[in-house]
Image (cartoon, one colour):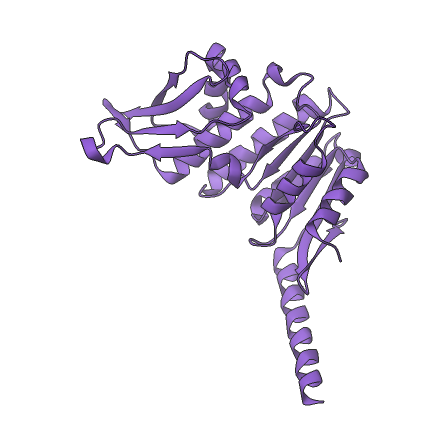
Length: 277
């Protein structure tokens, strides 16, 4: 059993290039990614890797312009340490188009570009069927943000900076099954392009989605990445975290769920026995 800090330290010490981690929602995956970010900072306090998690998504905020009947509605991007790297997307827009294309977006978009290169992009505006400044669906929004970060992951601007690892936490929220397959493919491509060519780089993928975990697991364990990949299950027991290696060929979700239920029942029986004593 361990705390989030201790689990993060386990990940850091392992040196395994590719780490897949399955966990139920509310187990602490996002907290784990934040903890890993904190313990992996450089000596001068800078991030050594790039992260996609709930905090990344929170950098994108809708300005609905209610006062003017939504005429100037846009998806604003809050300033963060990532802003200086947005130039790679501005200068090479085809990179983002390439990431979005497999999802077959039904909208077009344009950026509000800030003249200050340290800020890069202030907001994103979307259009569809001749209507400008529209609000896209939550699923479309998540796909756009994921593709935006995926483009940043592959940008050359990171060379020598925040280049040690990628930490991807649950990129498939609000996506349908078809788009989950596309997202899995994009992660595999990222691994093929970055992990093979730069053996010192690491990638962590955490998810509550059994489909994404299974697809990635199957693809990686039947590829040249097999020996570089470690599959894990993150769980909570008595308010403490446990990271277990999953070394079986197939992750059978229903059997795992039955095991969890049995543990809960056994724990309740033990507690009831203690109370009766």
